[in-house]
Each structure stands twice: as structure tokens, then as C-alpha cells.
Image (cartoon, rainbow, N blue to C red; front, top):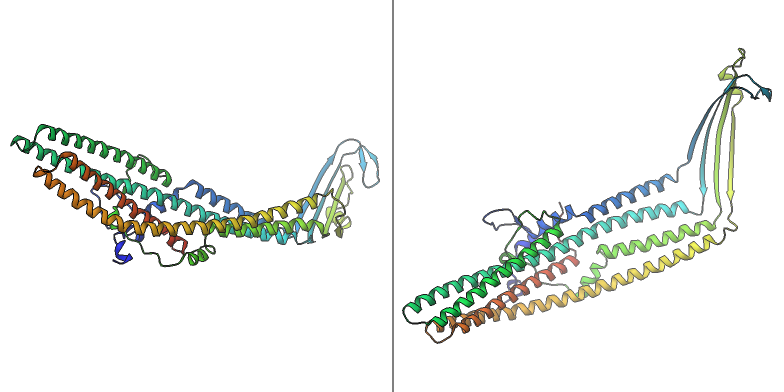
Length: 446
């Protein structure tokens, strides 16, 4: 049997095309749950706001290359003793004056600080996008795990219910056979005990399913009071692993948001260090401005006109400022040293994340291989336990086996079916992870 045929039972969750229908309510596929969770996750929304902040910082960095322009208007009305600006003597006559000025300054050179800050702002936007994508994928992976847990308990509940129905049928059959004298009361009591044990197991599995659904709803930020119906695992499908561990890692290290964010953090640390070094360079700026004023003695009817005073009092200036840092109490050197340490930390973090990614992929590949081998073994075990259970029940009908023998083989079959289901889910989960690290999207975002 080929690998594709071996895991051909999985189709629905990978494609997201829902064909199964429940008796009531909307059926949720894994992809739909992922998309809902990403859309309603609070951490994802917080990352969106952080990204907006980074975009605002980039706009501010671009604005630092533009000149700074300011204007000034002053209006003053003096009452009582004051200095007459025309005669420069004291007077007690009320006066009115106002002034106007317009100035501009432009930084020419400051050690490329603004350039590094702009690059830093662009890197922050890139880091914000990577953090947003990483948060989305983390949410999707959490939903994937919670969804599979819920599917597991959903299927074990179905197995337990089938076992319960079988026990009810055997109890009824035992009662009929006891009435005709083929079975004794002790065997009927043993069948009752088996039925009670199956009822307890069914209730236990229902509780586990309810808890798993609550966990899934929490990961999705889904209303806990609303029903959530999941698709059956009988229609799942996933592709077999084809790439090697090294090829998967080489691709993942260039595409995984966590690695890309660590690389971006390294660039940001480099720009941050260059920004600190800019304080060692001299800075040059240009300044220019115009100003004028108007004055009027309130008792002077022959005061010069406003236009004349504005023209006569007008002045202009143009200046250049050169600032050379000589000594700033070692603040610059301390800042450079600290940011150089941040750069080394960013390098260490990048190396750590790459090693963790390689280790994680190696573990997933090993888990995939184990799950693949376990499925083949469990298929054989389930088939053998099914035959054993069928033979034991026939022997019990013929009086060659006890109710305890029937209970033993049916419980063994139940456990084998549950283990087989767990192996299938493990194979599916690890397949999805390997496909994810090879560039396949976890879900289609709307």
C-alpha cells in the first residue's frame, strides 16, 4: 500500500471544501475556525495598532528632512508709564505696537542621523508586518491543535457510543437467553456491570469533548454559549512527506516570520548603533528669517502709516550654525557601547532562532515517520482485535466464553480504535506542520 493510499482517508480539512452535513447547525472546517480566530484575536488586533504606530514613525522620519518653518506675531497695547520706542524716553501716553517674523531652519549635516532613523523606521514597519503575520500563524497553529483535540474526543465519543449500543444489545440477548435457560443470572449481572461501565465511559468522553470544545472556542474567541459543530475525521486527506529535513529547513529559514523578524531586529540594531555614532560628528544647519514691526502713539494723529512702518522696519537675516561635539560627559560613548551590546544580542537571538527552527523541523520529521509507522501497525491491531471480538462474542453465544471474556476483547478493540485515531491525528498534524514549513499556507485568509 502506498503512502498516499494509506492516508487517503483525509481530504476535507486540507482543502476546506465542506461536503459533510450535520442534522442541524453550521459545520465548521478547520480552515474556517482558523480564519475566524485570526479575525477575532485580540493580540492580532494589537499588532495591527503597533504597525500603524510604526508607519507614523516613518512619516515623522521623512518629515525630519524638510525645513522647519515658524512664524511669530506680537500685539501689545501699553497703558500708563512706558518707554516710547521712537524717542527711547519714558512716556505716560498709551501706545500700540505689534511685530511680525517668519523664520526657517534646515539641518544640512548631522552625521547621517536622519538617514539612519529613516532606515530604522522602515525596518520597524517590516518588523511590524512580520510580527503581525507571526501572531496570525501562532493563532492558526493553536486552533489547529485545539481542533484536532476536539476531533479526537468527538471520535472517541462515537466509539464509546457504539460500544454502549453493543453492550445494550448483548444485555438484551443475555436476558432472552436467560429466560429460555441458556444463560444464568450471574452472566446477566455481569452484562449489566459491563453496560454500566460503558455508560460511564460514554459520559466521561462527552465531558472530555465538552472541555476540548471550550478550549477551541477560547482559542477562536468564539462565544462559549453558541454551538460549534466540527466535521468528521472520516473525510480527511493529507499529502505524504516528500522533501528532506535539510531542504525543509533551508526553505523555512528564509520564509518563517520568526526568523525574518530576528533578521530585521538585527538590521534595526545596526541602524540604532549608527544613529548613536552620529553624535560623534559635527552638525551644520542653515537659518533664515524676516521680521518687521509697527508702533503708534495713541495721541499722535500724525503717526506714520502701517505700510510705511512695515517697509522701513523690515529686516532679514541668514546664518549658518556649526556645532562640534567636544565633551558631553561620556554620554555618547556609553550609548554606543550599549547599542553595540544590543547588536550582539540580536546576532545571538538570530542564531538561536535558526537552531530552534532546525531542531523543531527535525522533531516534526521524526514524529511524522513514527506516526506513519504506527498507523500501519495499528491498522493490523484493530483488524486483529475486531476478529477476536467477533469470535469471542460467537463463543459467548454458544456458551464457550464468559461475559468477562466479551468485556475484555471489546475493551481491547475500543482502545485499539482510539489509538489508531490518535495516530491518524498525529500524522495529519505533523503533515500540516511540514507543509507549513515548506511554504504552504495554514489557511486562506479572507
